[in-house]
Image (cartoon, rainbow, N blue to C red; front, side, top):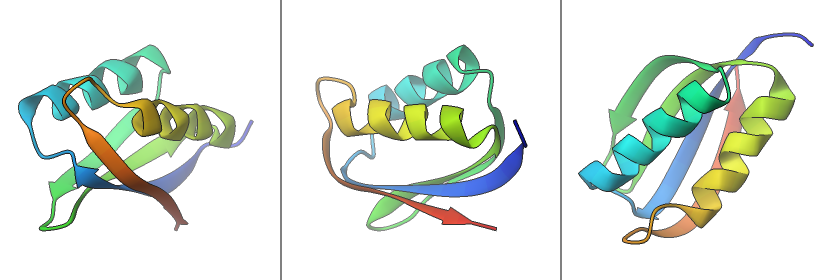
Length: 79
C-alpha cells in the first residue's frame, strides 16, 4: 500500500470540540498521520498521510460523526 497525502474536507455542523476529538481518535485508530488540520468557515480540512484504503475508512467514519455533528459533505482532494 502506498502512503499518499490527501486533504479531506468535512462540511456541515462540525465545528466543535467533539468532532475534533472524534477525528483525532479515528486518525490514531487507523494509524494515519495527520499532517495538518484547519477550520474554515464552511468546513474542517485535514491533511492525512496513509494508505488510500484507510483514508477511505476515515471518510466513512466522518459521515457518521459524533452525536452532535451534522455532516453535509465529505470530499477528498489528492495532492
